[in-house]
Image (cartoon, rainbow, N blue to C red):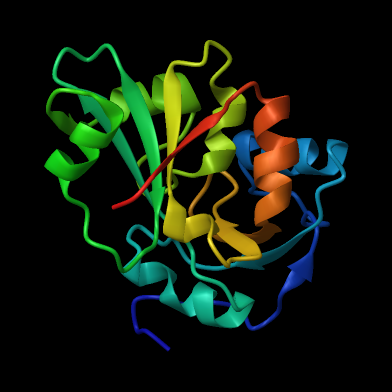
Length: 186
């Protein structure tokens, strides 16, 4: 296992029983998943700030945790959450052409916090539950969906990782939070 990733060796089903020390945004993520009757497995671990830090959780949960990038156009009028395979290289110009946008840049943490109530290192599709004004457009690389029964993501904090059925995210979670997605090929 990576030296950068310290983890427990137990995978839990559902929300934590003891919520002491858990942030409200994490608990709200579990509340919504439970409300939507979306089952999930959970692994608690030390803070994982990069996709490399998540490799230990990947192995234990038997999934590939998505790389999530927060992007914006030059004018700071369009914001995007890009979900892509962790090992895939990101090429800005290739994505820009696909979505018909001028040059894309990484979005500032202040926008991420304002729109998604998430801080860098914790970016996740589950943060869209906090985007009530639908300011962030979801982009999903086809390789995240094609042939993958499960998606790995954080519950709005980077000290836990979840294993959730891809179909539950696409067919139940996203419609409930009033977000659609655009399929891209990177």
